[in-house]
Length: 366
Ligand code: MSS
Image (cartoon, rainbow, N blue to C red; front, top):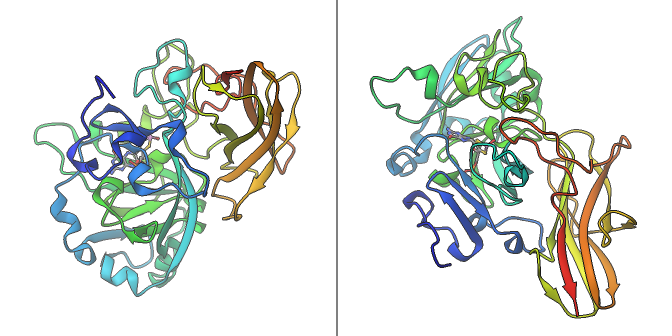
């Protein structure tokens, strides 16, 4: 596209036509590039880095990468090679940035102006954290968090706590967590956290620490800024602090992927409205689609395999549209009866946007 920003080197394998480059550290999938088969291709998966990626040499011999495991009865330093002998599982999971949908907020929340594409549904393979923990004698008494540290080399002279990517989640999240070395059937590339990444199903992207070099069960949350003041939901104009909710479990969300653009011109007659729905809490039970901006809704049908509660479900609703103007959107319904809300919750950094109205598309049928 004219005026498009260049693809950074770490993401040179991305399909440039499928992506919107916001910056060298923020690249999203175009709404028309998700496809219909349920898995997001690695070449089309969004990329977000808080710090620049480490040197590519770390993925040359992935089995040699080391991780410290702490806060267990017998702390250990293990290589990826060691981990591969300890257990194996694969999980299909939505990876979504906390700020996905930030571009719809009106107060110009700072950060990448993501629309829908800072999310993807991918397959991760690795060892379940609980298997590693069991092999090391279990979590020590009194630990309340699982804290993961990113393997970036920090520039000298800066206060590490200010910039280090270190995230704490409630320790019970270990039940479903994986230390992954494979993504969609191929060795985990550097861009997405190779050689080793912690995967915490149902949690926002930031908790899925890349090139993870330490995983510790801890009494307290890390003092790193990215945890203490960053990724906290607060009113517009407020500073972040530990009393505010942290970006942990993802909320209930869906959006239409086809049609895919505001102002799109469509031919009268049949249309298959497609999209995706997911939740980090109570699982998605159903999806409804509206073509009249939410006045009336029809039940959509799920498409393709059910890849588990942490994956997204694809949906389709067939509509027959005479010439006119339509506002097309979707809303997900969870097993516990909760429904995706109409409005966004205003907040300083533009996190957790799941309001269906902002995600709607207006199209013309002729
Ligand atoms: N990790 C590390 N190490 N570093 C950084 O920077 N970031 C985050 C995660 N992890 C980081 C990490 C974020 S923030 C996100 S989203 C994610 O990651 C993304 O991913 P990919 O693969 O897509 O790139 Mo927001 O919540």
